[in-house]
Image (cartoon, rainbow, N blue to C red; front, side, top):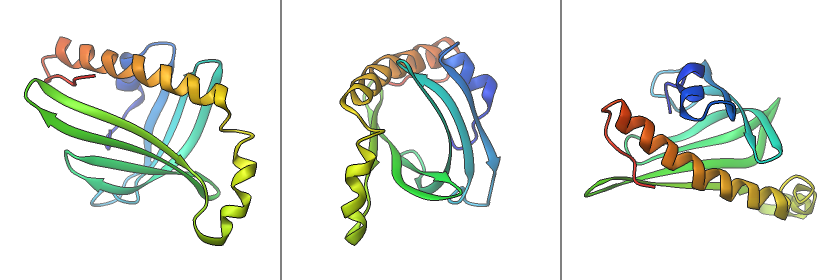
Length: 143
């Protein structure tokens, strides 16, 4: 996911995963800028994000960007298991420190309906990734 391209992303979930590619790549990957466009239920997400942490084979963290870095992060965790890889998907939204007083505004975007759609999306997309990787002989991700 650090060397993403639109064609691979679209093959993962055609019609739902639309675009995911690197806009700017830097040595070591922390600082890479990506663009993602996908449907999550009835919601269409189109955003840029910067890689803020990368532990090879363990974790990638992206922070959402819209001109400036926003108070939202997507964290993918990977854990080796006997029969594949377990993937965790966490979205964090909120300010740290005194900025927390603005967190209530985020509820306009991060609604219970969106949270439910995101949960369903993740429960569907990672088994699709597992199946895609198996079909390509690239290993397996346990969902």
